[in-house]
Length: 207
View 1 (cartoon, rainbow, N blue to C red):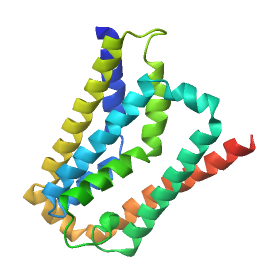
View 2: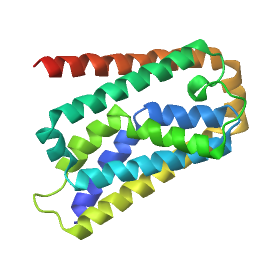
View 3: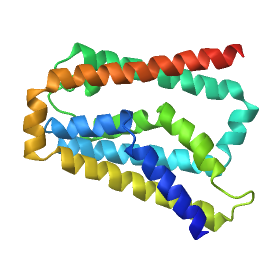
View 4: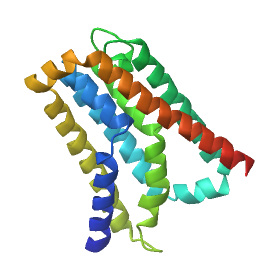
């Protein structure tokens, strides 16, 4: 059990550390003087992580295999969402990921974090394949519960840490100077991810 949990922990930490929509959301909110919003976005992301992990231990990979249309629909939704985020980032010199508002309420930040993670193709790929495949053939309920709990703790700690680090004064001042360029670069990266996901989905649908 310990070896399996350690393996899952390493894989999950590596997946979270890879820059993606979740990291982008929290870091930009925090760096633009919205630390509280970043923390609530982290809580929303954590809820999404809990649902993804729970689905994985309940057999989401088998569901996707039985209903490939469901997986394709989720991938299309994720790709379109990433393109929408990219367009908002590109059009604004501010933190357009939340629509360019002067402030983000706690509930809005929480919803944004949850939706970002639950529609994140990287999350679907990790939990639907790598995470699910890390378990033995017949995992015990204790192992499944421990793995889900570990994912929740990992997700909360990592994104809360990002909110703290990117809210530091030096980071904020640097971000303020390069905000426009940073948003354009982020838009290009997120847009490329969304477009690549849609292209891959269409290719799978034709196969």
